Length: 405
Image (tube, rainbow, N blue to C red):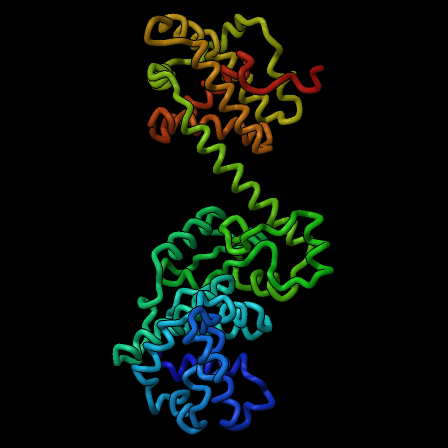
């Protein structure tokens, strides 16, 4: 991308409409952009330049010359670019100018940059534009004129975007649409990353949104970002409402809880010999003829009273396998195996899944998959892992008696 393309994009969507009919407004807007990237004076020399109106090296330049910079017929001189880079700011004013512009302007600038293959979302738009501006100055300082997407692309931005996409399983949290449709090369066209607590709220709206959850200290933190499909993102950015805000807050909290549970579960260690028990179940025929189960506990029906499909499956597993599994665990008991430790671990895992507010079927299936994956067993052992979970339902580590006092 040439500087003339970049400037024309900003001038078109951010410039004063009353001055857009001719070139008279372009030099003024150009100098305004430069003012936004210059830091406040920090030395006596800079103070003097500011007092004389010379802090911006283009402030006294003739309009015709500046117009040539704008249309690309003359590059910004190396000396000017170097001088600007020596006292460039952190970009906050420039970034705010972009981020707090009209929603339609932000959307148009974002789409134009995407057409040029720049990796940008609405939430990162101001920062990316500042990086492009700064990169152009570095290019001019070195006698170059073009900026490519790779010149401003950062690995951390890519990593953060991929992490956010992974968090929502590549689906829009509001409508369920796939965020990636045609492969990794087209990911940018399928989604936008928005601030959950919008930056564009007025004071009254901020007060209403804060009743649900207060704005984060750092608006650009990953905790305040979430990817949405382009339709939902555009609607939320232009028309933020309390209902969608609450849904996004709940989704983000679900993601945070899920990550914490995964981290906690990763720290739990199952007994190594459990693998042999699971593998052996594929060769054990259920003993349904003698369904008297040796236990002193509440029945499955008292623990699973509303999900009859799950109740039936667990009852079948318990009737056919409970005694056999109990005998196997008893035979394994020794210095290198402790059933009590295994039972405690299963119970801890159960409570971690319960904290996720899953229903009983969800908890049961998550436990079965977690056991299978923890024991590094293939999908072929999922049913055997479900039988193990049923054993611990009957053994009282999983599920409580409903409505128990």
